[in-house]
Length: 267
Image (tube, rainbow, N blue to C red; front, side, top):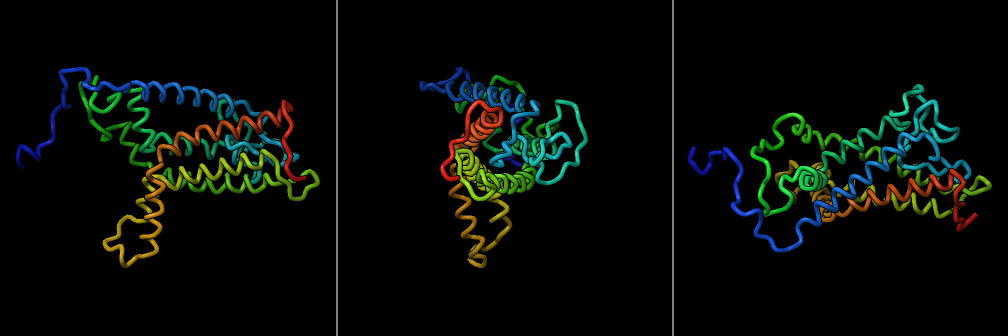
C-alpha cells in the first residue's frame, strides 16, 4: 500500500479558524433553533394524549397515527387497539413514532444538519474542526446510521397510513363526502411526506441500485431518474415536512379542542 492509499491518522488541521468571509454561522444556528423547537413541540404533543381526533370530520393528527392504544378515543383507532394502558411518556402511536424518529435521525440530510448544528463537526465547510478525533460512523452509536435503509421501509409504510388518514378526512357532516380546510391540510402534509420519503437516498438506491446495465431495465431507469430529481430537493423536503407536520397537528388540535371551527368548503 502506498502512502497515498494509507488512511489518515488524524483530521486535517487548519491554522486559521476559517478563511470564509460569508455568514457561515447562520445555518448551524438556524438548525439548532428549528430542531430544538420542533423536538420540544413534538414531544409535548405526542405525550399529551388529547386533542388529536375530530370525530365529526375524521381528522387524525399525524403525531397519533396510527392510534393503537386502548386509550384512543372512539373512532380514531383505524387499525385496532392492541396496546394496553401505558405510562404518559409512551405515545399512543408507539408503533410508528419511534421508526419515524429513527428514519429522520439517520437521514443523510439530518446527519449533515445536526452534525454541523449541534456537534460542530465541523460547523461548515472550510471551518476548522474543533474535535481532535474523528472515527466516522464505524463505532457505536453512529454505526447505527447504516440502518437507515431499513427505517426507510418503515417510513414508507407509515406514509401509506398517513395517506389513508388523509383520504378519511374527506368526511362530511352528514357522513358522506365533504371537504374542509383540515382535509386539504392533511392531504398537503401527506404529499410532502411522500416527497421526503421518495427523495431519500436509500429510495434512490432501492429503485436503481445493483443494476449493471440501465438499458436492460428501462422502467427502473426511468423510476431512478424521477427519484433522482426528487433527491436534489431532499434537504428542502426534510425541512418543509417539519413545518407541515406542526401545521397539521396544530390545526387538528385546535379544532378538536374547540378553539376554532373547521372551515368547510363543501358539506
